[in-house]
Length: 318
Image (cartoon, rainbow, N blue to C red; front, side):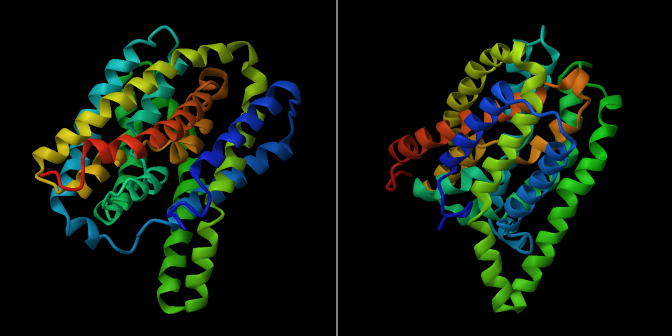
């Protein structure tokens, strides 16, 4: 079993394909679809957050060098790269804002599986995930407003507050309660393990539902998504050496370097998707599609990382 479930994260991709096909060929403008989408997003966040060590912050403190490298990447290096890449999209504000939101958000879910498969020290980064999750809810929207140069303004954010509270914070509180109960109850512990196995299928269903709901209004603009693909690939290419450099400067051992390289490249599209969907659809309707595009390419990119990271950082490296 992986930390994101027994299924490979690649199984999210069929959900992406299904959502696009339904949106293009079988559009359904329905309150039922909208309500079901938000429920799926809430369940998705609950399952993802349930897999994080929310009650074990001490793990992060016990690895201060890893924590410093992670925060340096996410607060200094990634924002600079995201800003440069976003300038390419200045003519299409929705693409620019979508790119900023998803690249600025630290990954909290999908990259952990790849860390394990690549022989990285998953425990060294696992404890920092709750901190990154909490930070992205506050820092990412503010960073996006700042780095967008006024394209996204603070007046666009109030629509996201209710979603953050109900679809992200609410499920996260339930996840904390479940973890607390699992410490005292073997039955709840087994339930938590069982729930994590549903994470990937639920993510796939949630992504499919978002696309089914949003694609029909943007069929004529779907070709614009091709403009963000090379930028997301460029991000993945750049983060490999920069993550390695951060690991070297922090004096990490080889398994920790592998973990930093992979987790640094992983982004928080899963958590940012509800926030992107909450933005005014008349102005920012393409933003969730940009987030899902990045999520899809990240899954493919992490498969490549799984193969190349052990070659770049062999186990005997210093």
